[in-house]
Length: 355
Image 1 (spheres, rainbow, N blue to C red):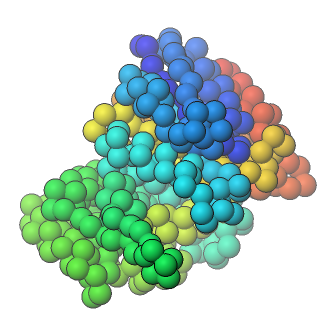
Image 2 (spheres, rainbow, N blue to C red):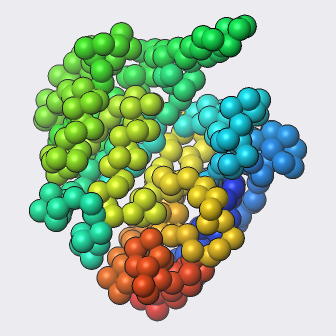
């Protein structure tokens, strides 16, 4: 099978972690007889520096022509520290989501038995925790009208959702709940926000179509608390854009490292697979960043973009083995830390020997 993959390494540690994911993808393809064809393109701060646009049209074309997009990370301190910057790397990410129709971000949150001691929560709270966060990705306050008054003393960000946007993400949530343990938590702020009241109204209208699903409703502040107190109580969580952004970063911490969790952004055109962490510019070029989240994003790519579940499982088995043998980067084991490239080599070699 030919796999046409767009590669957007981006900024900071992006190129380093993407390189390791490609090593792993190549190892899987060698074992299973696939051919991976990679097309690289610029995005983020790197694209701004090169062409003045964080998501140029040439990059969009590469994404549209691909079967899947393997994405690293974007962001740079020179933009983060300049509130007056007119062009920012994150604008490219938002535009990519909009133009590719990436309406749903799937973030599995799963603990690893060999790393339970790394979690900031007690072992009995996190052992066995395994849930899916589904975040709406192209609506809400991130995409609403925004601006400042002429005197600069007033700013606004509008949060807007349509029935169509809410229905399609809730449909995905209910469908995933049916595939898992038939439990769905709809997170909103319906006691305050009108958009949240529309979310809850539509969820209540749709719930009877899925009578087997235990549908629960939870305010976002309560959800933030319960993720820490009882993470095993969640199975599938669905929520709007900003709430999902915050809650998924919070949930990622219970695994013990932000560098372990992948994500898939499901689109109307091409889907994008990326780690949930940022560009970590302080580590760029030092060969110390954890590549596992990006490698696991490649596993999601095999599963969701190409329907190659065995190939995805090969990658996950290799990652589990590396964690069990503590062949990991410094964020997990500082005393015996391995380099980013060494972890990538080890995972690829494991797949070639055991795949």
